[in-house]
Length: 118
Figure (cartoon, rainbow, N blue to C red):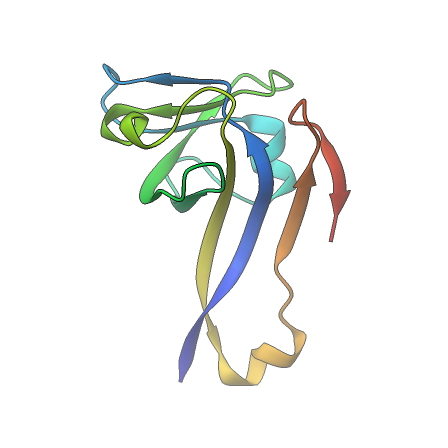
């Protein structure tokens, strides 16, 4: 049996902007995507720590080193610049792999720089 497990998490990223006129998605600094083992167009769950909103969207690459975390499209109604969010991905893991499976967790600072990797 497969269980859906947390694959990666970026904790306390700061929203750098919103764009309601964009088709949709979450723009994320490519360096953060690589560090969290996330890829473009991967589904992400976003949990807004600031206002309690939750939504599902997909990732697009933002410029490496930019620190960009921009919420686009309809989801832009659920976040504002300066909000703290959690970005999470999940994966199906076989029962026999669970004891060895560890998610990649990034803890962010105020400038969207990685403070800690767990």
